[in-house]
Length: 343
Ligand code: PBG
Image (cartoon, rainbow, N blue to C red; front, side, top):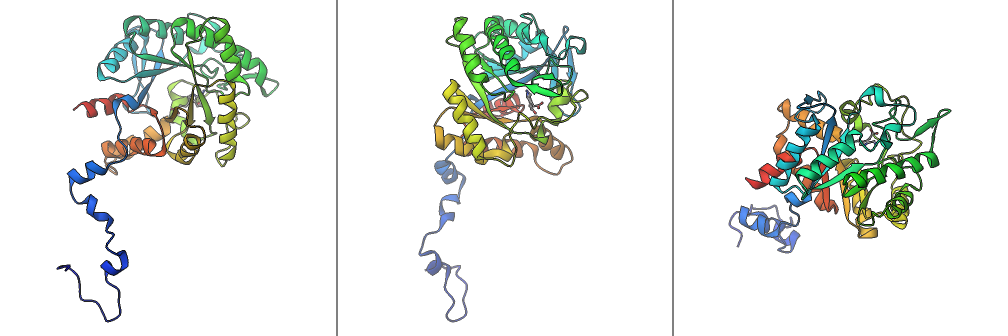
């Protein structure tokens, strides 16, 4: 007998009749039962923290489009790496804001063994060897035009870029990078990097492929952070994937795995959960999402206006990645989430 059941007009089915007694709300009735049946959980082990680097010492610059995120000189980046390790964050990903005077048409400074990325890697691995360091093997922080490839006669030239990125990956590995993460979407880059690393004796350095990187409006704040916003002319549609495509993303991932990628990444994150699920189901490989700058800043902006609960939205967005099939997430929220999960 259902004591709260309303009296229904003759002939109308009761909810018990409609559901045949299958009431899905039963398991949601209390905190303990919700915890008991929860399918996905976010832990600190899921987090990769992307940090921005600048030259100098004891420098910490605000990034207006990314409230709460800063550009850090190497000495301060080391301090943050120590903090991250204490929090249990498994890995950092570094992105440099390179001095404008060092940027040129071909991004040649990526081949400087002492460039900002490599100096930061050496300093972090010396001070905090237990944290993983992931380096971005892409030219955009180093080119005067902000593209991820070498620009010749208005064209991003593929093969010359791949050769340069392969050489840069070896320098990054030599500096101590544990994972090299090429983000430029040039054809053949994974195989070329694998060959270059192996030839140089870095069999144990892994490759996280930005396998499916979409041409997206959500990278805006990042371009402010690394200073490519004012430089970039045109768009990146000749090398990033059309955001209307899904089969093409599967082909990209398949190709990168065949060339030797150890891990796959989908970028941006939240608007592409369908891609994450497809790749995980199709390849069963370690799969990551990059919750990019625009996703971060949207949550921060709405929270700052009091329109959403920022903390809850942050956690909900991160659990969504787990639900979609991610093994981990690159997120600017990493230290904040790690603190919360600890407390
Ligand atoms: C380019 C690169 C991008 C990001 C990281 N590396 C995209 C771009 O500028 O086109 C975006 C990261 C973010 O938005 O948080 N190699």
